[in-house]
Image (cartoon, rainbow, N blue to C red; front, side, top):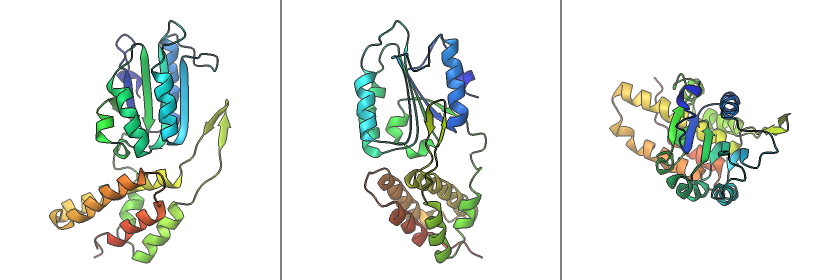
Length: 243
């Protein structure tokens, strides 16, 4: 799926890959093997970070090790997969991806690039594995025509934390946090609403609502913000599309 975008003779310094990590990571590891790079735990020049939410501490770690020269003659590889990147972490990463480091390459995997700052996205070679950008919006389409009470109940259920974790070959697969699930669903709601207002020709009438979504997305990226309150604010001001 992504291998056609990767040229081992002309490797970009930073790739941003949008899609499911469980599908993307195996392909990246296959590509690493074709480069002759050892991806086992005894290669100090290969680092795989898999987290739910990428925080400022993770960004500092990456900045520290990312600027160091490799210990071997091989390329230095970083694979980072996260459901969300907090705002201050994104700001901290801007300089790393703005100034390429020789023989150092980054593969960043996210479920949705809309959760990232546009200035950060612009630093990458972008690859999207989404075959159908409208897939997964069914819940959002139902959400925007629900009664207010049902929307609030839906959000409460959506934001429930799932604490189960699976382990495979010493790798922990981190499930979505409430914050990352909220960001994903917010993107789906925005798409569903955009389709509705374009269909009815009322975009200008609802411009304030879309501005509110942008603000909520920014606040969701900030540590300490209340995910529940922010999503409930969206539920409160959704335009009435009921017939």
